[in-house]
Amino acid sequence: MKKAYCLDLDNGRYTLGDLNLMLQNKETMSYPPMDPKDPARPFFTGPVPQRVTVDGEERPFLLYIPSRFPISGAGLFLYPDDGVTCEQCLDSGWRELSEKTQCALIILQAREGGWSREDIQSEVSYSEAVFKKAICRTYFSLNEATYYIMGLGAGAYVAAAHGLLSSSLFSCLLADGDYQLDERLLRQLGTIRSDRDSTCSKLQVIMPAWLVNRSQEEGGPVLESLQLANGTEDRGLRCGGTEVYQQDVRRCCGELDSLPISEVRFTGAAEAARLPDKALHEQMLLFALRFKRWLSIGNGAFRAARTEEDMGLKRFEAEIDGLKREWLVYEPTAYRREPERKRPLLLAIHGYSCTGKMFAENTEWHAVGERRDFFVVYVSAYPSNKSFGGRTVPLPTWNAVGMTADTDDIHYVMEVLKAVKSAYPIDPERVYVSGHSNGSLMTQTLMAKKPLEFAAFAPQGAQFHMALNNDPQEAAGRDIPDDGIIRPVWLMMGSEDIGDQDRIEPGNANDRFLDMMCRLNHLDRSRGQCLENGRYRTLTFADAEGVPLLRFSGIRDTPHTFTPEMAQIYWDQFLCHFRRRADGSIVYTR
Image (tube, rainbow, N blue to C red; front, side):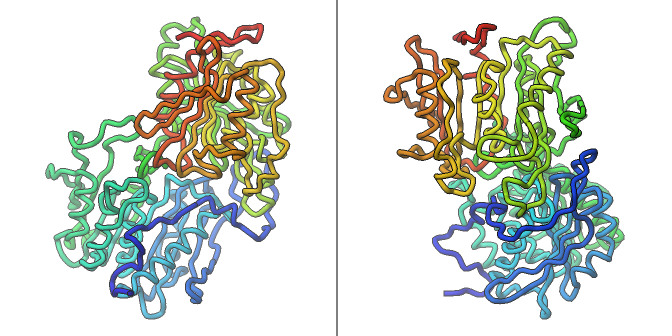
């Protein structure tokens, strides 16, 4: 039975489900031509009016894409006050703020009678529909680590409700207005299990936030809940008249994939009255943009937003096949002390819609390179929408097995490797490649077409026989012929990944991959050894000398992602043990 002021949920569970929504786009768009000299230039800019239909009711929302929006960037889901249209909100200073920060806006709008607290389910259903349509990549691409949510006036209530309900998706909650949730709704949110960790509720997921209360100097239960979730302590910190609560480093987990960086801020009525709205909202948005929640094991991992310079990456550009291409190089610190010594090289390949810089932020392969003293090269794909039949805006796509683009990416990668080898002292026997999703398919394309260039392969998040449209016939004839070349490979898949996920069933993509690689590496498929270690369940196939030439890992409670933890495991437990001699043979060092 429907309850006022509460959500309609079954079994105390809530999730938005599969968010690879570009696969569901039905209509083909007409896109402007791409500029080969500036392939990252946005295809659409300015306001784009939109509508969604929820439970038979049509409601508007507005996209605003700034003129310098990156190829995959940040988006703020903005809930104006009652009686304020999307266009009025945009013209109240948010257009200029969007252009200044290069953050796209997704502006929602209350019904004629205002936002409904009593029927909060209808507002959440509307929010879900807007969210899903905004991330389907028809007009632009929002990066999954940079979804932010903000409410103004009465809109703060719905923003807080949806933000806390989807606490594993949003990277920061901002509220300037009536954000205090009804105690029945807040109590219900405390009983709903989080998306990928049944031991905690939606209210226990870390969520940076800045709350502004216009009527009093107390933050109330919502602030208290956020303080608990973020493990903050009150050290008397103030920013102007705003209270600042930072994570207590003693209470933060020491896992490789997370850092104690979250923060909660509260501005009371007196300080809010002193600050001009535009100045306060700019401060709040800039605060939010400091945080990125990367998909990870569990409910996501927070890391600070970082530039190429922050990460110590060097940018290189060249015209290859008539197109402007780029790549980033990380030089380990020890290289400056011993510039002549030959070192290994790891080629890191991002997934669909991403870039080398994003993959660096997400995986931190360069941090592994610093700890283990090897070079890292992040390559970037060229925009295309060929794989999706023109139903998405062109986004970086590798022309690889399972996906198509107009670029010769094998040639591009070989040109990059040639340039890097000529500039740095690379050990030719210790060159490795790892990639995620579409980059996993590119990694496996190189494994098929250029195996002698690499000592070992670490694809993650997509298999050689993956069917993009869930049609097994897509990959029916897909294979690598046995050419006598050994290809050491470790494939990892998450339990909540795309396609066949981490399941191994007769004839599915994982099963066919293992069959193919056992044949190529001359391994006995019936002699795999399984080891469970925490969330990782790893199946290993070794040759007669005990060399683990093939591994497959399923990772529990893990979505479609590549984490720094995976990078470290790949290197320490697999890649660094292999060398490929000039004659093509493989040497394994224990």
